[in-house]
Amino acid sequence: MNEQALNCINSRIAGCSFAIYPMTDQFVDVITTSLKNVDTSKVWIKTTDVETCVRGKITHVFDVTKALFLHAASTGHHVVFSATYSIGCPGDSDGDVYLSTDDHRLNLNTNNLQQEVAGKFSLYPLGGGNYMNIIYNQIEEMKLHGVKVSSIHYATRLDGDGKLIFDGLERVFTNLESSYSSHLVMTTTISANSPSKKGEIL
Amino acid sequence: MNEQALNCINSRIAGCSFAIYPMTDQFVDVITTSLKNVDTSKVWIKTTDVETCVRGKITHVFDVTKALFLHAASTGHHVVFSATYSIGCPGDSDGDVYLSTDDHRLNLNTNNLQQEVAGKFSLYPLGGGNYMNIIYNQIEEMKLHGVKVSSIHYATRLDGDGKLIFDGLERVFTNLESSYSSHLVMTTTISANSPSKKGEIL
Image (cartoon, rainbow over all chains, first blue to last red; front, side, top):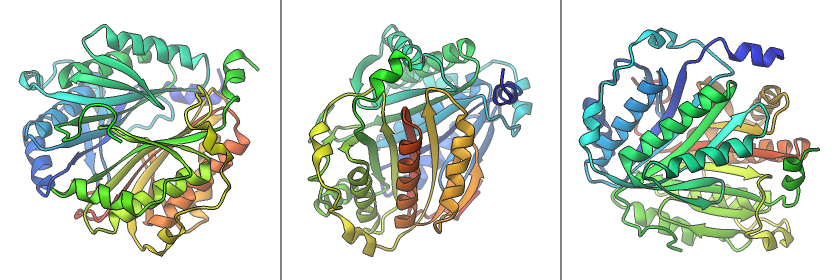
């Protein structure tokens, strides 16, 4: 194991840096309302002018990001969630205290929100290995859980219910974290209430 | 060289899948106006309800994406550009014909647009190796060209003039492409005209 790998395993805190983009003059209200409806007390959270970062257990990182997006989308505005989920090297310690929380999710009420979405995700298992096979296996996993999956450049397209898509992303991330112990990155973009038709428009 | 690496070097077409998010009720107008102002004839381009994908030479992929964002931002609305630039494995051939274009950029007039922006970028050199050192070297490169660089979780924050930031991203991507011959991914988010103050707000 090289020095890089050794540094990696000190902290298994997961994190997500993300932003929610409401395409409306009321974009500040949409974000504020969404934040009021979500309990973020089991994650470390920091917001800047560019993004919000949450860190903690995988369970809570997904619970909070899923809830924030679905509440924003429930306003009916065209809203897009863009995120980078990450775990592993290069580790740092902000928020490590949140790893001692229990596993009970605080935003289960989000599962009452019906929201059709369209999106995409990409997996980047860093540090080498047969990474394309790892990615293909996880794309298959998505299909088993009610998400429509299709091929696009540089990513995999996802269509379906917002809850199922977030749950699928969490499952894939958790599977890879437990089977692939180094540095894992997953990016995703999820769009709700777009006025554009599904698929190709130009 | 393994089979995966062999498959990778067949096509060196670069690409970018991206979206521009205008936080205004006039979001469709902002995008349409931006598209009218940009010459995309040297790249393969396809737009769906989730994203736009452009493919071609690195030069033209950056020329077009930089121009689209800066023209959208010049409307004065709060506008965010979110993108994944990629080159290498797994190769596919859509748009390979655009690799035979000359190198003359079609949107040089973009350099007349002054636009302060805040953003971030991350590099994912896939397929192994000492990837963290590769990343750190390219972050240093950014600083040499008038971009303010700072550390954030899961990315590097960039502040400065929009043109300089896009030029810096292109330089980093080109450097890595020529020195690191496998699969390279760079993600970036760039925000203009945000009503939030720079840096931390919560």
